[in-house]
Every structure is written in C-alpha cells, then in structure tokens.
Image 1 (cartoon, rainbow, N blue to C red):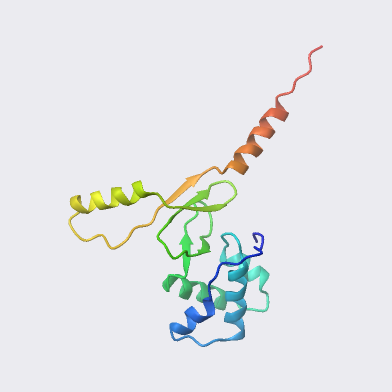
Image 2 (cartoon, rainbow, N blue to C red; image 1 turned 45 degrees about the vertical axis):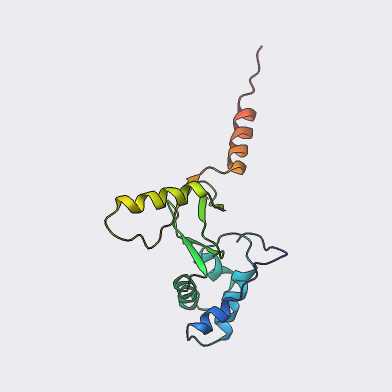
Length: 157
C-alpha cells in the first residue's frame, strides 16, 4: 500500500457513512480510518490485506458506500482492479500511470471550457463528467531512461 502521509486529508469518512444512515461499527471505523491515512490511491484488495481483521465484504461495501456518497473517487485502471482516492471538494480530473498505477490530480480551465462548448452541441443536459488521462509518470520514465543508458554500454577490443 502507498505510504501514509504525516498530514492526512481533513475528512471524516465515518461521519459520511453515518449521514447516509449506516451504523458506526468497529469494522467500518477501521476501514475509514485506514483510508483517511493513505496518501495515495489504493485498491480494495490492498485494504483487505492491511485489515485482515475486517471481512472482505465489509471492505468492499464500505468503499462502495463512500463512492456513492461522493467521498471517494473510483479510478478505472487499464489492466487491473479499480483504484480509489479521497475526493477533493472542488471538481478535478486524474492522471494514472499505466506502469506503476500512481494517481495524480489536476484541474484545467480548458477542460471546463470544452465541456461548456459541448453543451451547445449535445441534445440533452450534461449532468457531469470525469476524465482520466493515462500516462507514464516521471518516475517510471526516469527508471526507463536509467535502464536504457546502463544497458547501452559496450566494450570494444
């Protein structure tokens, strides 16, 4: 699982579940506490491995409730299980590294201008959108470059 941040995002996920009419249980509290401490995106399976005392179904249901409440973002991964991250208050989009799965967030006014322009061309009301851009992150690019440069050394006789 990704590293834990020293300054967790200021959220209270267990309150989000209670606001939706769900009871506060020890298992749900364990799941929400762990999510609140994660500094990067995570998978449900990662949570299951880190919380062996919590049933797998509870982990998955808790995540689903948090996604439905808008407290978590569900990020599709090209060739794997979806990843999740704590949703920021303001609207944003994601970058996802296709090699290591690192997730980034961005906000760009051009995307929003394109959406406003599309409203004129689409027969119906746009009620929302989301965007995931799949990339090779700078860390993976650096690893590739260092592997390529170390593999190109030849000896002449």
